[in-house]
Image (cartoon, rainbow, N blue to C red):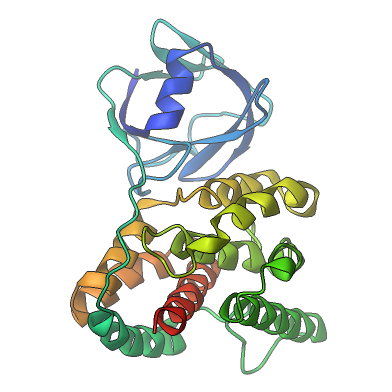
Length: 291
């Protein structure tokens, strides 16, 4: 019997109801479940992972010794989440979590100061090959992908600055599925950008309904795991490390901003860097639009 330590409020609500599904994919620190009916992806994460939408953090250090395989059945019985006879997770003591993005400040002085140091840190320590260009790409394909990512993120950024709402959906959709990684770089950039758009008092908040409209057209363009992450971000739901970084860069010191940034950059391979650059793009747009 393994205990759930904490869980996303929405996921816990599904478990209390009748929840069934199948194992979608298994990694060392995360196990993804495709739910029946709603056809959503939910995640079981080890203690090494931070809190995130559709995620239940369980009291295990690793998942690679359980013998769980793709298509194993998942069900709920007596307030326990069961994966075949291989894993039983007790739910009652799990604390609840829900993403709460910070409020965009009326005074941006601290944000502008922190942005300088944060951008320098990403330039020095961010992972190249996605949104951040590699100085020496390993192939013509990587170089062309990087060129397209630069071109399309610039078009989207300029669309936001010029407040031309008509092309936002098309430019955002052009990024989906583009780039390396389990969650492609273009998708990760949008996750960061969508999070900033959803800050209360964000000068970019006029684009909130368009984030939601993007989700209606992109499902065939990317994989199920990335689509679920994008869908949550389109409604202002992102993982805890992203929330913490946004709060730090808006209200914290330079040191606090960099410490929070390190945790974002540690996400995936290049995903953390791609998300961070989406956050920076959104924050820069907010600064320019806010005056």
